[in-house]
Length: 82
Image 1 (cartoon, one colour):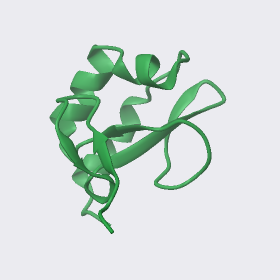
Image 2 (cartoon, helix red, strand yellow):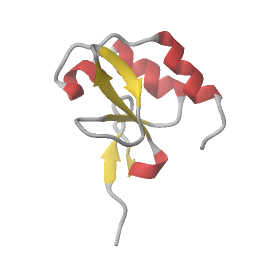
Image 3 (cartoon, one colour):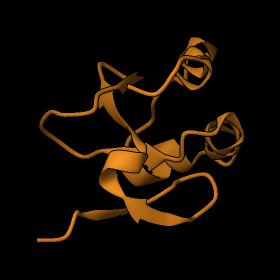
Image 4 (cartoon, helix red, strand yellow):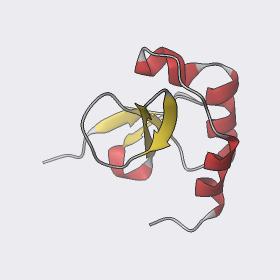
């Protein structure tokens, strides 16, 4: 059985779901959530992909709602992969 393939909202690269970071909209804000219900949006584990997705409003477009992107989420890209 193959792993699900997802697309990075920043660069458009397709990769197995486990290689990407998942975000969801919760109470009008973007939140990191590897698992959970609802629509998710993915980025590569590179800060440049996160910043590009935020600048291009890709999180809003993919989640189909307006979300606040907290710049503090960038810390996820500096931390070692879990």
